[in-house]
Length: 121
Image 1 (tube, rainbow, N blue to C red):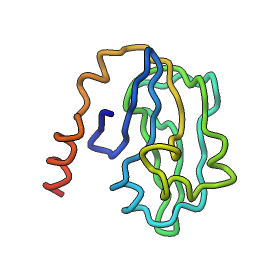
Image 2: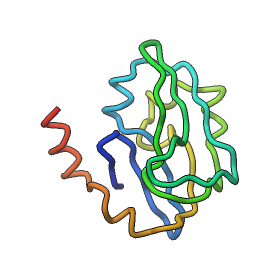
Image 3: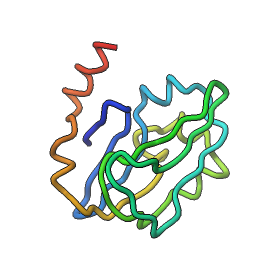
């Protein structure tokens, strides 16, 4: 897994990256009550809005940590948004992207670097 300073994570298999938010982000949001996932076929650049998460505290955009085309969206989150809180770094993923620039993944933080970053917050 790789991480951004905006608390998104990426797990890459082949040329497809699964994207979600970190446990830290889910904890900061509080109870998630609504999730809007992207449409399959949408193309995003690194840093573009990818999904929307609404909690009892706030609404937040989830940004694309890498560029690519949405090849799958986690439609189950529409009926079970609490999955983002329960399984933020596994079953609570938002979308799978076919990478258009795999080198972007290498520029993201690994878990140790992300943990060190969290310690500064």
